[in-house]
Amino acid sequence: FICANKGCSITIEVEIKGDSQIIIMQLQGNYKCKAENLKPFYKEAKSIISDIEKKHDARFSFQHVYRKDNVVADRLANEAMDQRRSWDTEEDNVQDASMEDNAQALDFRRKSRIVRKADV
Image (tube, rainbow, N blue to C red; front, side, top):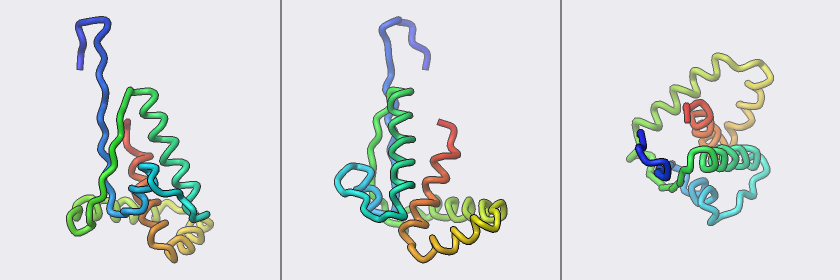
């Protein structure tokens, strides 16, 4: 977008959709993130969102989408996780195995990897 006027500005609107309703509610600020194993991922996501908001005059909105209605994104996230596993060190594999005990943590981790790798 090119603006001819010096006073012109644009605001970027970003809509985040996710199939974990609790994570969406946490990112909206409606629920606290209480799970100790999820706090680092929550803090990282909030930090990324804050950085983008500041640097690009962006506004974020969050929407819960049932997994059955989000098949393409779910498939892409699973493919990304499968690719990531081939690059893991032995230590990371141990951590991944322990994370798999908590499906919510794995789901958030998968989605946060996609956000981190996006060119924003």
